[in-house]
Length: 255
Ligand code: G
Ligand code: G
Ligand code: MN
Ligand code: NA
Image (cartoon, rainbow, N blue to C red; front, side):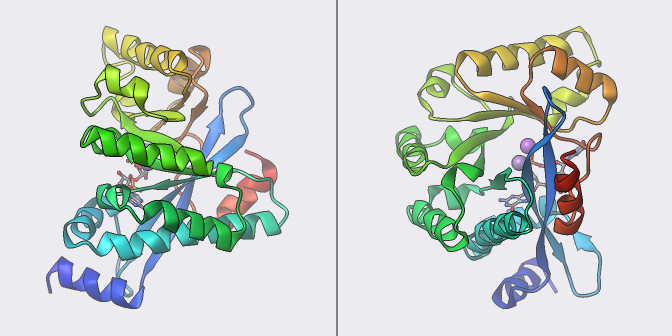
């Protein structure tokens, strides 16, 4: 059976979907200051599917709207559970797909999820990609403004892979620039690797945004990012995306 109809069934029954979480580590302290929720789909007793393969299908079919609402709600419920377990509060990052970000109902959905979980809006961060922001810029600025007014944070994901106009970047109320992992990966590939990351870090700084580097796998990448003043890092060097139980242990330790 085609992936699309299997996904439709799974979303109808809300079957096999769950979230793993990847820690975000503050460079200055080495402490976990946030977690990024990452969608997984285990089909029956079969293997776990990567969102890279099925999220595009969810987007094309519109199924992402229903599942996306569950994702936001589930992430907020998990944040509440961790807090009720006495763990220190952290920033929870949730990825939004393009159709979700364009949905006029989205601010209401987010508000509802926060309210139900009793989560302060400042604890939630929405990750939107650079390419999503570069379309229909006027309505994008309006939507971002609504999130800002609600007190929810917004991160620009995969930064550097799209076609940001610097003129727009300045007008977007964005809190965080996430440096795409391809740049971290290429850091030592040639001379320009370090220059590109330095440039993005200084751009973020000058625009009053925090910087987060993703895909940090090696100690020398981490050392470089610390030295250059990157605010936080994510990657396999610290932890792969992990279950809520494993994350709870990391949160208890603080690292
Ligand atoms: O976790 P992994 O590296 O396999 O994720 C692959 C891609 O899927 C990433 O680009 C990530 O942003 C995206 N993704 C993961 N979880 C979600 C989610 O909950 N919603 C959306 N829209 N995309 C997600
Ligand atoms: O596009 P987005 O940033 O949301 O994607 C996050 C994806 O990156 C997740 O699928 C996650 O599994 C993956 N990821 C996280 N850390 C690393 C890393 O250190 N190396 C690589 N190659 N992928 C990573
Ligand atoms: Mn992301
Ligand atoms: Na990314």
